[in-house]
Length: 224
Ligand SMILES: Nc1ccn([C@@H]2O[C@H](COP(=O)(O)OP(=O)(O)OP(=O)(O)O)[C@@H](O)[C@H]2O)c(=O)n1
Ligand SMILES: C[C@](O)(CO)[C@H](O)COP(=O)(O)O
Image (cartoon, rainbow, N blue to C red; front, side, top):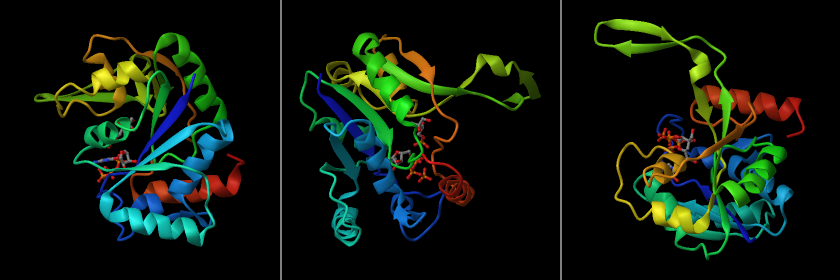
């Protein structure tokens, strides 16, 4: 089955607050986004990568690729108003039948085994999502105060979320709602269940300046 990786990097990075969009920030001397694309090529050199970037950043990205001699082949699609719209733009370049994994451009530390397991499982399950357990106590906030909830009832959701491409395209034909914070929620709105599989704890979404410190430490301490 043909495999696609749809790498979304069309956001504004408001929580990071840097002038240079966070996907271009260097960690260990190389832009975050290049590390993310490399993770997918390391898994499968035949994978078809579609990178979603704001139109205004695409020339800069090409310039960076020349500067870093970065030659992994990939197509580029325009970013949209929300993550949902960015994924939808990228999906327009996907030909079926195929498996398509949607991955945040700012998650460069995804483990090769996690990528492999998500694609392998998606061939049968059609919708696969990597998750990790919660290691802290969790409280639910309410109007009258807060209450501790059982952390074993919760999981933190990562990417890549891998789907049968026809299913994902059908899901993304639905009208946008703000509840669509990931691809699984879009597919579930069709009434289709998703299959959960373990992710890796290093697979952080680089969102804030603190995450950047963790990312720098991870580069220095492991071989991911
Ligand atoms: N319109 C959007 C919004 C988000 N994303 C992507 O979705 C991933 C997860 O989003 P997040 O980390 O929250 O990024 P931003 O939306 O850029 O961050 P912020 O909310 O702080 O502005 C990122 O790779 C981001 O680039 C996207 O492709 N298009
Ligand atoms: C898709 C995602 O990374 C799963 O954890 C996450 O929902 C994206 O976060 P955002 O801040 O809502 O873009």
